[in-house]
Length: 303
Image (cartoon, rainbow, N blue to C red; front, side, top):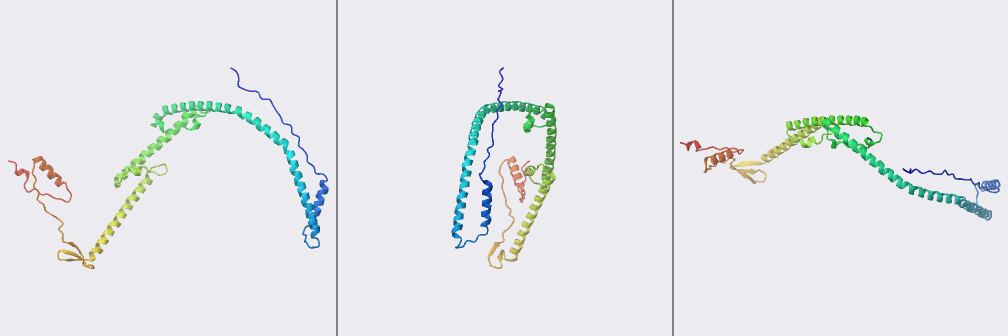
């Protein structure tokens, strides 16, 4: 089988630094420093205005000449560097063209190998999970479990520790759930909403405290409402006066209510079979705040 490995030739780059010099540099520096000292703290007057302007023009010309020379030398100095950079970028483009299919091929193979290792990890999970009463679909495979360096012994130890921790967590949840449900039954509230609040940070003790607080708040709210109604009733009654069979508002003279009976007696005749009449009487007896009296019992009909 032919090898895909290539042999690359060694290469090197020759570079000779270029030295840039300024003719009469020392004399130029001294002269400029002398001028700078001479005009330090200068006061321009009518007498020296002409000479000062002349000096300024000469210095501006020198300044521009130096800057123009700098730009010229920089352009020439950078020319071989720019040419070298263009060549390097061209070679890199050729290299990258070769690297792309190589990198893609390596990535494809490594992904395929990782998927094979992932499938093996899933098989180990499916085999071990039932021993801990754990649903294997609850386990999310971590990337490190599919590394080439992961051995079956190490993987088994990691999974065993994880399954034990998960089982303890589930057992604790079931215990907390039972405590919350029993307390909800004791205080007379629906458990579903409270059970859903159980978490690693919010255990049964916390939920039960919240339940008790809500029950107490509801109780206090009902007491406050009852007191409000009673207070309003007292206030209303203090404004009322009974005259004859009517109740009158003592402030407005308005008739609030006539005397209305609170109980009624009704006679009902039941006609039907014995079974139907018994069922009808049972239904009447089942009504709250209603009492019945059978004036002609069924026993009087028999023999």
